[in-house]
Image (spheres, rainbow, N blue to C red):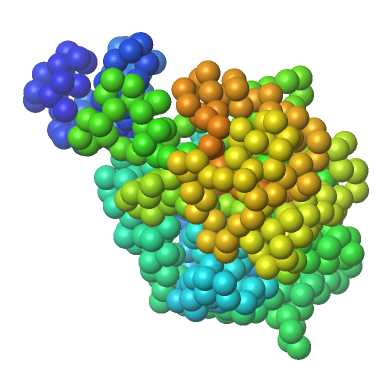
Length: 510
């Protein structure tokens, strides 16, 4: 703080206090520097000082505030939230804090039961269609690195971080330029947030799937459950990118859907030590350096190949949500202490690649997942190929230094049998370029595990500027499943925006 005060040429008595805001490492220009952004509280007019100083690195910080109700219409029933992933959790929490007593419907199980199902599946147990990496308390985001990076410049991001910290996220983790929590801590945070929703009068109903909308013309009047009708005036659809049956139901009921771009590819695994050495160079091995992260991209015309969801010190996980398909994803624990690093290496896919119907992208994903399932032997084992063999078009016969971490087991198989030629071709051209950017990235023993298909939703549930569906009044499509978010942070922010849309129209329940 003293260094920041001196840099700004402020007197000691003009600074009321301050704290570290964000910190990161800068490895550019051949050196290693710690970069810190500091928050100072000044005694005078802060806005005037920022204008007078005239430096783009000196900004006025406007703290995020908790949204408050302004609507006056009366609700005949509590608002309903379908899905309890990041978007649904934050929508429910904001509404509960403001007296709306939301009802949450989650098709999967509560965290303790869900985690037991997931771990049993990893060990070779039965696949459960409603309780897996995609479905259950916390949504797909509960089994990830807990990455909170985003490109959206929304002030609500600060509110998300503050609420996560209130429920157990480490303060120092949230100060990082690329904050992350880790799967192990995130599970407990999710449960804590759900308990607050319930303590404030909300209700979370697990193992309850919304089977359809109840409509009066183009107006929502409720949701159809298994043998039950749940009345509501407004509902938030935070169903996630893998609720395929829900997409088909919504389409049949006249909800406006559009096909959208997404990406498919493989999970690439390296030794974390190799990634650290490539990133840190002469500083490799210095005590206190975090597990290295990377972001890589290569574009040819309108199509790109890029790394996604990079998990330092993490593992590849079995992420199927439908029987007879193999899907990969990645996660890390808070310590990021695993031997391997992994990331999705994906190639962009557009509706022109798979058809223009709103649900054609789902059919495309299913074909790839079924092919990977068959290649792996039909028991949720995954097809694996080393980069050096994939590059030459031959089946791998032995591992190098990197051992696959996919928990259900794996088989050496040609990944060309599961991925379209345009995906494989661009992967082959991009990897050498990535190796030039990050030395050793294209080592022959880099492990490719297939397939990665759930990078984002293949469907957009189109909404207007007021966030409501274009065709069903009272319905708010939200988060990743609706095509309006890409990761925990942006989904959480979208959930807050959905809650704000309800509070702007309706008064809290009496």
